[in-house]
Image 1 (cartoon, rainbow, N blue to C red):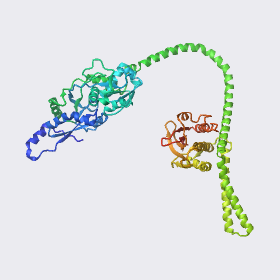
Image 2 (tube, one colour):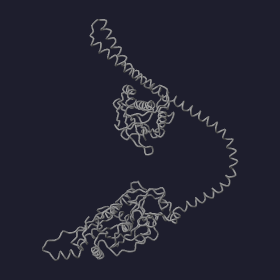
Image 3 (cartoon, rainbow, N blue to C red):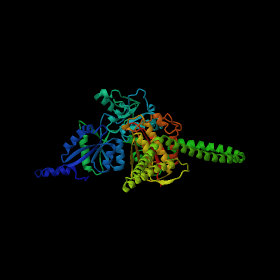
Image 4 (cartoon, one colour):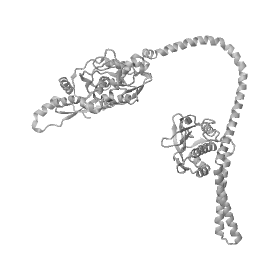
Length: 593
């Protein structure tokens, strides 16, 4: 904002010199005010000051902008304000960073301090806040947080780490509402707000009480911290000093509404900032050895104790080295035998796992047997009908070459269809070692469609595919991933046995997904609308020998998880938010990740 550096006296002299030339357009001056209790209440609170300044300085138009702590800081940094009213802590930080200067201070009976409030009879002291949730408007507020946080840290240096903060945001009524709504156990309010609210709205705020009161607190309001100087009125760096002086004189002459006085010493504010290491006292650059010792004094004691223990241990270990060396020589031969036995056991386990995977594939085909038989019967019946028709036409002598060619083409097509089904089944059940190849996830799902299409059609299940076009390739074993997909789809079909025919549906989705720990990859999911799993079932999902099927053996999901984890991926399940059923999804890394 372009600032005009014309003094108030010059403008008044010019307006009196040429009264007939028409009044000059007033220059706007913006006053930023910290809105700790809502914008409207802040405007009402500072309206007497605004009215006085407007009356004393007709050549200017004063505008009040209620702002939060962060917004007030940003407005000063951007040069959007001419004056500001805020709490002493933020003023000290703005003075350090942006060179604002106090011209007056609020002279009020209400102290600048913090009050702890709660509706829980068990909370009596600061120590009772350990493990509890504490609602605050902002971690940068003075009366709403920092004044009390200093007292808590002074009472027990470790206590702040055991308190869970809930930042409710402005206005300050939000912190009290968090306690009344049960979202927090206690709240930090600016002192005297509790008494004011209980007088205005006793039904809402009557359940709250102040606790952990500060000994010797001044005033009639309950307070849990020491008091700090009042809020300052400050000018920003580019504001005309002459104008600021005249504004200060006008403020000192106020006799009603807001009352102002000469700024007092801010030593207490700087002590708070120094103890909390904020503003100008925040650490930057090199840290001195004394500061390191003060911060990590307990760790130094622990380190010294460890050094002493290490010395004692070294003396003893030296005496045992030779003895252990002899023992190691003896144990080395046994260890060599154990390694050989472990290698044999691992090889046997690998063969056993391959056999289990083969059995699981056969089990899946067993469950799909009727559907596969129906899938093969259709082309075989079609071949039989076309062949019988050709034979009847040949025996009767009434046939056309074109008709015979069409029938022959249909016979060939149906035979190829039956052969394709048989080929897929043979490839799926064949025993073999794992073979990793670069696979396109969309093509893998399409290949599986031929195997599970018959089973879903006979069960009356509608299948929808939602595959993103930009899925990265993966390095995986094609048959093992087909086994995982078929097992998940068969489980989804079984889960919807009791559902109505029109409600049976499976959604198969594929999306690129970047795992925070493992990098880029692909996430495939199978969603059904069946009976789903309860919380206990989800907690034990894919455990071996755990099944919800009457005739299940509980190995399908366990083997599926081992297959996915062998590919450096993960398999999980969750209950959908938009209806019944279960969503099972697995993630595999991209080929180049």
